[in-house]
Length: 358
Image 1 (cartoon, rainbow, N blue to C red):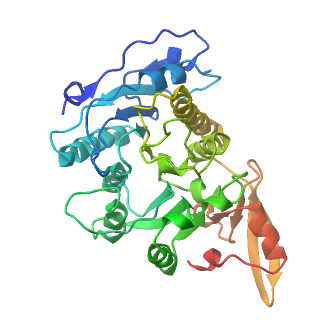
Image 2: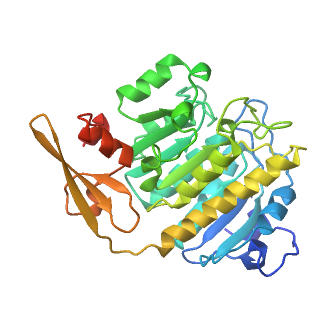
């Protein structure tokens, strides 16, 4: 597959030496970040696949500071939508695989939320037992229809015999927008489901759900809308501008991050701030990835024991990052990421049930 056949390269944007755009290339590089913009929204009701212009987002992103970023950033361009929606999914998966073979982190921007299916499928080909975290205001477990849509893609991922998923975390759902049965079912199968209210003002409580994530997708419907709508399904309630940027940085800080999707963005918005916000979300993601790559590979841990009734439980704190983990296993990868708040709750006799699942 020739990239030239499926990608429209980005137009040149003049930037200064201190700006991010001065360091952006158009080639996929080993261990780098690859930005891919997508215009296919056929996974939503009445969605289309007409070519959209992301120039305002690019201009705002390129003009932000590159700080001391060391990881190579590639802006591959705009993905040409397939003749059918299935074609788009297929081509996107092939493109994602090219990135994974080079150990690069692809970031898909635009398109409908169900393109998360392609991100999961492509990553599952290279790795099993994935940790998937999604920020979305809706939990839809519909299994209707043959084509993949934003309503059925999640059930296709969770029920497929070809996919292996270790953990799924659904963050930012809003009670008044969801079927009670869908939320109840997610909790019955012991997937973490976190309400919007629990994510507001601070990332501390939900940061552990990003720390080991292989794949993270963000549905822009989970962000409160401004002007003519930040998302194609604008919502009056959601994460605010500062909160979503803070969470994008947490996504980048994941120890295992291999793929990111930012979907349902309203690329046709005439409200400048919406394009500026998306640009800054991408920038905070890049910042987080750079910070994570600067962390030492070898870590030291302090162990804290907590007695609850007649049982003793271990919590460990990373001496470098200050982050907390549950468990006494000598292998760090077997520890369960947790928050300082969960450690404090354990000292008061309240142990989070998710620690006892494994």
